[in-house]
Image (cartoon, rainbow, N blue to C red; front, top):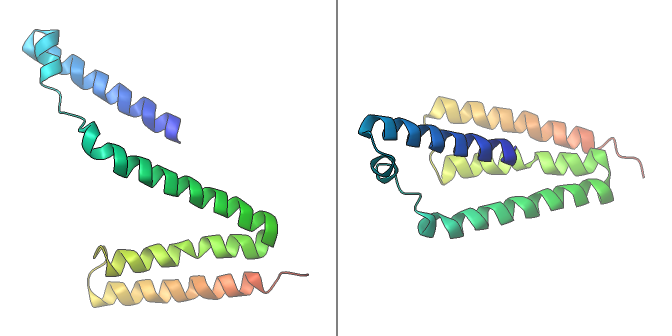
Length: 123
């Protein structure tokens, strides 16, 4: 996934550079018209989010390895509930009483599924 995203990003920047150079009739003017990447601003948050993502993936692998598929993957899938709660409470991604109630009902169904799957574990 990351390699494809990197290739698409580079291809997009090259295409944008070529279009701007063609419009301005100069490679230098085309380069100067490109927006700044703001690397000093995005380096720390990007590196931190990538590190946290990797730690989460390692945790997922470890949970499935030590707890088994039924319990480990059930715990991992509960991340949808946590991210949904954060999306509603912190980021206001879902607004409106009806939509939030629909999300809560979906979360309850997900939680019931997690409990049912974890009950299938045999010691």
